[in-house]
Length: 112
Image 1 (tube, rainbow, N blue to C red):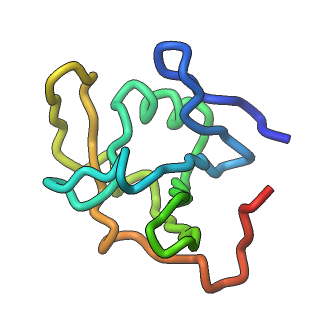
Image 2: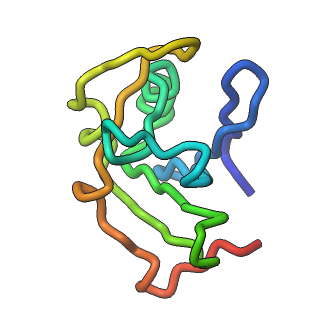
């Protein structure tokens, strides 16, 4: 059970469990090509810091190959990223996937 569900403009975007923020992303819809990763709003990052989150976990779903992939990074990798804002979106930061650790192979399952 999550400690807190996270919403942006009434849209559910993820949840905090302990010190981990988990968010589910569809590559076709959410992947930011310029940043080579999945952006997170600066307002969410501020809230996560207040909640004591230290790890961000991105769960890639609905991939073309049919598999889910799981990536993790320390929140600092997002906090130190350059802030940007594009048409119609709030300020965001993006950590490239190459700076994250793929933990899918550790046996972590997120199918439920």
